[in-house]
Amino acid sequence: MPDIAAIVVSPDQWMPRGDAPGVAPEQFSKHCLAQGDSWFTIGGVPPWITNNLLSHMVFSLSACIVNCALPGKQLAHMVDTTRHRRFLQLLRGRTAHKWNVILLSAGGNDLIDAALSPPTAPRANRLLLTVAEWDATRPAPARYLSPEGWATFGTHLDAVFEQFLAERDKGINASVPVVLHSYDVAVPRNAGAGFGIGPWLHAAFEAYGIPDDDRVEVAVALLEGLRALLASMVAARPEANVWLVDTIGTLTRALHSDDGESGDWENEIHPTRAGYARLAQRWRPVVEACW
Image 1 (cartoon, helix red, strand yellow):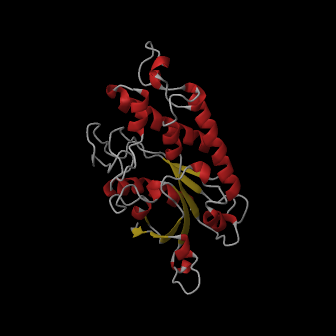
Image 2: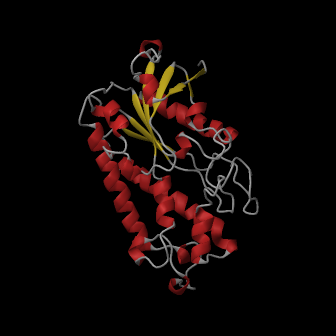
Image 3: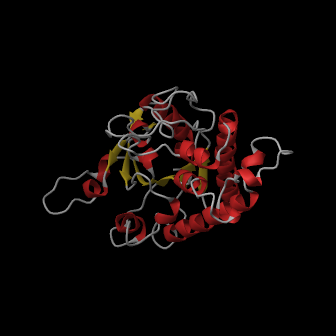
């Protein structure tokens, strides 16, 4: 099959205003609408350090990706008609277009926010247990995880994803395929994205006093738990035309002791350019199977 790099454009380039130049949709065989977090936008400061996942998408047909993503965006915000009006307009509003597929990068920031919930929060509102709550008879990583908090998180994720699908199904894009992904394991380490942004899991584990020797194992449990939740959301909706790209095990892990680029990771939670290219290879067969 040929390798044709996808062209990524902004909503303003797709729907130009006035005399501004725009793209010609008829030049592309497939049209994709993308929404998501920093894996679809920027993963470091300055922005050109890590690039993003969409910029490495390659398919056998020409494709244009209209990218509505913003760094740090959470799944719960994706259907906010006030803050993200352009995405909803392109999805089911006045300027809606009939898309071949919707690409979604979501859930990772929700997980990090839940992990960063302070130790003073109710047990059902945090993913991690305080030192006083640890049960020494339980092995790592279960010793450090809150089952009540995980249940709350799963309910939250499922509810906002259901809302997202409801928005999709309100207009001409009803039942159009949605492709989302799991997140490969980010090793908790003191490696922020620059200008005081991050670290994330490292900060959460510091706040809860999780021992260094157990931190990678806890991170694996969190990211694999998120993958299981996403997979269950997809399996529970067999008629919804939702597809999951499983990326865990794709990237070379960073070393816990490194505070900069390490393995396929530019910083704690964002891959390098080479890392994103590897992840994009996992997306290709799934996207081409559903569009």
